[in-house]
Image (cartoon, rainbow, N blue to C red; front, side, top):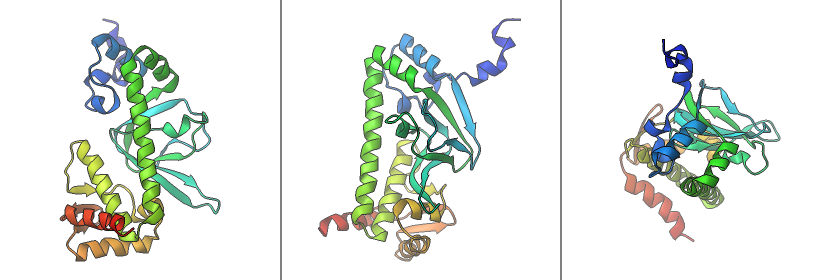
Length: 247
């Protein structure tokens, strides 16, 4: 009996980035076999998180970044009056946990909105490896700056937009991110509730519902429970851009 077959669990936990279909989203392209093998060794563990389960909590020590393989997460913080303020939504192919880098502990909770699986990437190992592999270091920087730009975009969005502009920008952003991952450019299933969308966009639940209804009436979107079909992308873009033109 060979050694590999005595440890079937180890074999199934072991994730080979080299043949993962998210590899190009997580790891720089063009590494040689030796470098890929090193990365494979770093990302050796996957973790499953059930719907409603927490990947990490606010205040927990930061040790790893997580690449989302399947599923959908929200990040949130509890406000002083005990409500949950949603700070972001993350989907398969995106990296979660960057909030912990600054102070060595997480500054939000990450909750699975559906059953999910993540690759655990110990940060000290990533840092060690990125000192050896320049392409990886650049890639990690790129991921971080992309996240900063996205957060900044949200802050601008919340600062000056009316309800329909916020919702239009939100839907366009979501579809664009899904499209990057090979999904349809016009259809999406909302993994989050209307309430969570409202929390993220700084809108009341009824405002979110009313705005969705307005978009439906105007023939911009079709909504069946959580299924949203964008019928007129140009109209959504016009709604967002009209705001910029009005300043």
